[in-house]
Amino acid sequence: MLQAGADFVYAGWNYGFGENTGLTPQHLAELGIPSYVLSESCRNGIGDRSRGTMPALEALYTDLRNLGRIFGVSARAEQLVAEYQGAVREAEASVPKDRPRPKVFLYDSGTDKPFTAGWFAASHEVITRAGGDDVMGDLQDSWTTVTWEAVVKANPDVIVINDYDPPTAAQKQSFLESYPPLAQVPAIKNKRFLALPYAALVEGPRNPAAIRTVADYLNRTSAG
Image (cartoon, rainbow, N blue to C red):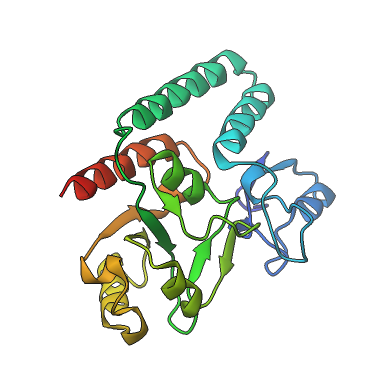
């Protein structure tokens, strides 16, 4: 950061900022560099590692407005917020009222244990606002590890794969399809997989479009 001559730094906690790297707001402040932590990633005080202070879309709008004030472009920030809110409303309106709500599991990574996301992560709102039921939505955390037993018990109809390398989304799908404990899970039997890029599943401006992508997929597969 010093070599780059940064005047300001913003990032998420544990995806950008982290105690393990020494890149923390406190350390930056000691160096005279102001910073901002994305709201979705802030700790909620439940446990030592749990994160999430507000729903992800609320966090997105909050951060845009805060950044708008920081950079003196509040009007532009409000315009973006309005555009994103409109995109979310259109995505929600695209879901037929009589369509079933498929059970959806977000798979990020992991073979011994799956790394997934809970109520405070952006993926939860992407799934639920698209007309799906997030099977890990009861977890009061953002990104966290669960067990394969919990996934089997949840019996998801669809699996959303967080697509970033390595491994590739195709490799992740191949593992899931070949993992014996999941063989009878509907998502596996029916090959219902949807890969979305990392940037669509953490708090950010790609969330509204991701909601529409998931809604279109669930609308199509539920009809078929």
